[in-house]
Image (cartoon, rainbow, N blue to C red; front, side):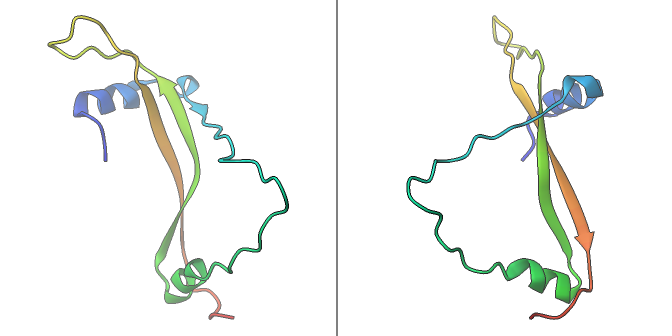
Length: 95
């Protein structure tokens, strides 16, 4: 879901140097040992059936100044731009 069209236009008008990669902290630190996780089969099914696979590769953030009409002061919301990677495939069948 996009923001207000004016904010989106301002974010798109920012120079490339204003955007920095977003570094997310880990959700939590594992106190004991990592658990075994189930095999991820969704990606292989998508690849096998020839659908377009969208994977989030990273996100960039930038600060921009914005002041709504009825507001007395300006706000500095952070803009966030996802960087998806798309891969279409007719890969190998499952297993």
